[in-house]
Length: 534
Image (cartoon, rainbow, N blue to C red; front, side, top):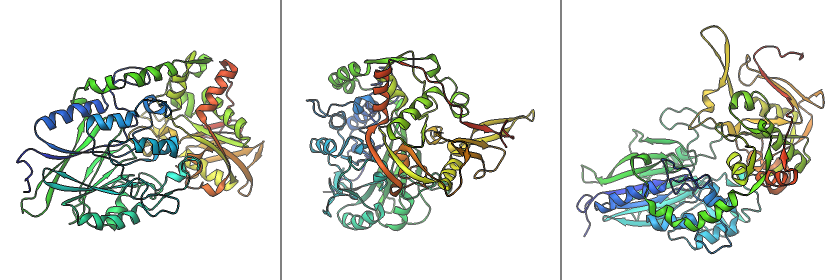
């Protein structure tokens, strides 16, 4: 007999996405308390389940990367992976892998999947010549008498970011094509159909404001337009928060619930007033509204003991100039010693003529006097590999023009101009990780000029760079394969390196003992003719 929603309690679909290892409200990096984490979701779930609610609980990916608890996990050791432990203790029903799950290599990923307490769903991921999804595609869950079908999808951009050694023989297929294939099959098996897509939208689904340049990375809008029969589209990847329901008949609810366990999506399911179909009532629940359940932190005791020992390892010392207090004036407008250091490491390792790197977050503190592994990982938290690509002068100029759009020139009441960050570079946070600072060239941005025409000069070895010149550029594989720089692609790669940027940083600290770098001020940002330039 079918049980109506509300007869025994609420029927809820609850989704966390882009948790990035923030399972506990105690930071695994420095032990400091935070007001977010899945231990707060645990308290919420305990309350709802105790009240009789039926909960379908989904993790929408990018869970097992981004904090020392997961980044430093020993895959050869005896401990259960923290993500699996969390999924088991909180009673998750399904997991949809995200792009960062592949940072640890296919062997380790398969190991975690094999021990997982929940099904992994990813319809557009196959291996080798197989047409079948590597992990699974769909699953039907009975919650309160409602058959809820779930289809998992991942952004097809993963090969643009990951070194091929990390994803050998894996095929990341079109999410749209996979949805067209699997939604009709699932539709006949369920009352309510949910697509969980680890990807987002290239533009605001409500206003049309463009959020990112390449729509292939984030195809949420294209999926709902191309594939009928979806009741709820769960998205992620972008760390945005929104709930949106188009007015057109038959279009699904679209939700995205931030990142780091700071909030989660709750979707109440109830019978429609007409008696035909189901009504959805989504909301975003703030984690700060619930206390942290201590049982999760207790469960990680053995993991944290190992990790804190590794994080506390002293690597060397750094000059006081490696601290960052004001990113605008210390880093973005003027070369900082830490940026110079990383660029020097990339140049030495790759032998490229030109190199670039960025400050990954405007709130980063830089390196203290006594440098530990914790400090390195705090300041460079991406697991990026390096490569060398071939670029022409024209492509390099195009990339630099894109970088120059980071800035805006605002006029104060007193008539004086002030350099600020362009509003389009601000989202959940300032996207400083996309503002690369280059070495091996001399260049200048004139902010008095319109975006796209700001590159005032570009020189290599003292000579102007012509559009037809050929140069080698050392950068991360993430960058080289089209992330932010749509003018770059994998076909331009001429050499790849398995080492990560953090590997180079750690090795150099151990070798040199003390860091002191004099930055080369090879770029200018100005709003009038720069001194000494013609």
